[in-house]
Image 1 (cartoon, rainbow, N blue to C red):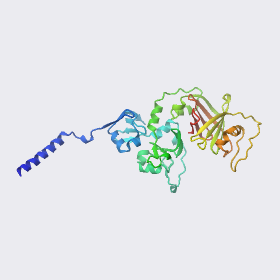
Image 2: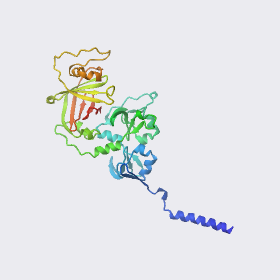
Image 3: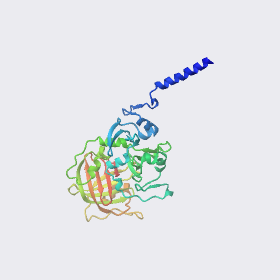
Image 4: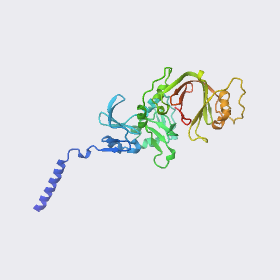
Length: 369
């Protein structure tokens, strides 16, 4: 019996000795994980947060070391990832950066100045946020609710819209912290909803050298695109034309825009929706050769459709009809601001229609911004 007691005491002493030898908080010793894909490492507490909240699928690979930056007036430790920027607040709390709002700011899209959208009825499967005046509907509402909601994504700051992402157009919606993308080609894989690569996009833009604006720029297009996601293909602004005569006409499968650039000539810009002839939006630019007194364009449109006339009509009849179909509204006069860029693209801002169109250096890079 005495021997058994001695064994028990020795075992207890050993356990006590092991516990005393282990430093306090040994189980929370900071860990580090390095990623050969980008050459950066992530350490606790950011690594612990990264792992517990979705890891690679949610945040992507690290794109920077942990470093100190000033974010919205606060100087704090941060680390950039492909889809996010993680921030360590003064009280030790880890939060995701407001990258959705930031990328819209860099692109000159003042979401807070956009008029509120009308609320969609609840039976439509939507939720309305009066804080930002935006609806959140399928396909993003369910994902938002199941994956962290307000804490993870913040409020929606745009309505659902189509945007070009890596050569294709997708339905997207911006939130304070993220951009959600609907990828129907991934249906059934669990990745039909993806989070935009906003961390990568913002870092790429911030790394570009600043542009020196031309002296004749008197409006904001050049400055807006200087920091936009188009900057890496458009490069820096060159010639600009402010408040010139313009016109707009919508068609079944696209639009036509006319601008009068004075000594640089009159242009007809054709924007074609994706469809039978192309899987992506395309555009073409024509010289407007129409002269007053030329005969009207003759054609027989379907009911509620129109035949374009004048400069639009000449371009349409010469071959664009097969792309665009018939006009859906009459031609509307407008006023435009036009900015050209060193990469070969240009931007048209239609003041009356409150639209900004970006046309890249290749015919398949065109979208309403």
